[in-house]
Length: 74
Image (cartoon, rainbow, N blue to C red; front, top):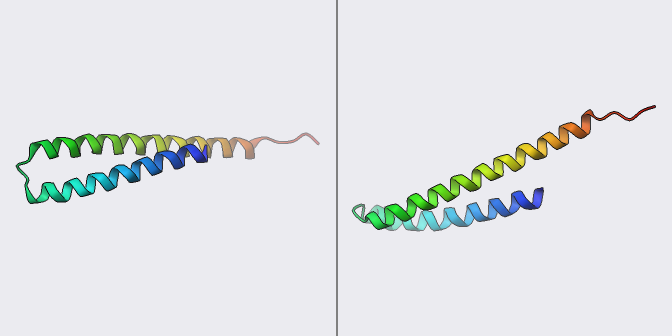
């Protein structure tokens, strides 16, 4: 599961980098609605990646908790 979370984090970081570079251009020309739509689409993808990351982390914690709760017979 850690590998999957790493993939989502890498994708999110790549999207953030692209989004931030577009936003710098947009900040100089706020009337450029095409850029605004591109940034919005990237924001949606970033949010999706973040949601997947959080879900992976919750799954890892749940699995870790379940492993600690399992008792071995004596």
